[in-house]
Image (tube, rainbow, N blue to C red; front, side):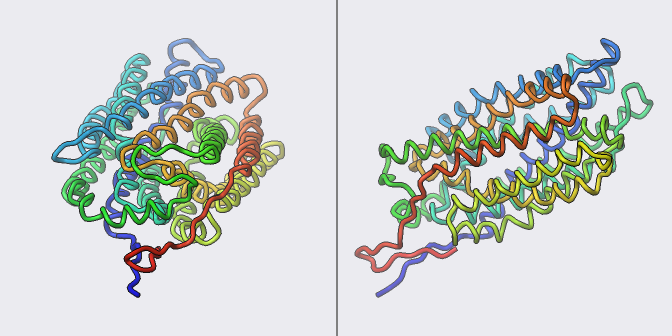
Length: 444
């Protein structure tokens, strides 16, 4: 009897990852520099003081907009039917607008305009959210459900190359305090980021023809639906079972909690380095985290297929707890100024964060059908962005009153809560099926 197997198109998946490349590259630059810019401009405007709480609020207010924009553009792209496809029009417009605006952030910093920096940050957020959901939704649009963890690993691998580019730019462009003669030179790394974004966009537009791929993948996508890890059938406009709804709610809550933990460190790591470690740049630690994550993505996808997505994430959460807890212990000792010690724990965090991200998004869109991928992608990003809206305010307030050491105990506790909630998810895995075409299986 003839076997029909699902095969992942690695070349196409790699190209799809280019969208994630631009997203991570821009956000890495944004999250590293903006808190520093804001803190310097607040001190220049209002005098010396503790402004972590205010910086946290400003960073969080940007993310608040994403709570509305991500679901909106996700649903809108679900309903879009154009010659370029569902997602490509949003990717095209959002990317071009973002890359044109992005260099104005350091320009306004160099010209001592706090209002200009804040407004430009807001504009970047709007246009990034315009294409972020549609860009991420492209992968499940053209990848059968059983192959999505592996595909997500490849896409994250490509995306993290963008984060490494950003980290390298941070290291070679020395951060200068406000008012220094060469502060205008900070436009260069931002402009270089924009150049890489336009190159990436051109490659994507030339190589990915959405409508053509959707037609070619129709039969494989239908088989993927039959093998979905849900109790309900995932035909168009299907309804989730009670267990599927429970799993989805637990998953969304877990995502919220682990982003509360991770984004706190992501937002204030540069400030922690400056104030506690007394180093000009501690971005090497985030580069290590990124590189280790990249190394983990491909084998991590295979691990998820072997032991299941749930237990792969449990291992990832355990790694994150060890890493963040270790950093907290360091912060209480004389080793708190020694960067290599943090780097070791950030490497462990890189493994954990990769395992978490590999499977969490595929688990959410597993519940979707072909007409609701953007909607469920919106659920994923709403939970993560809500966390990223709240956590800078909370941890900024905590650090102002309890000291910078509270950063890591805060993150550790939220990661523990995420693990507690996540273990209650019921794992649903389906065996290969047989139909009139013969024995149907899948191969990653």
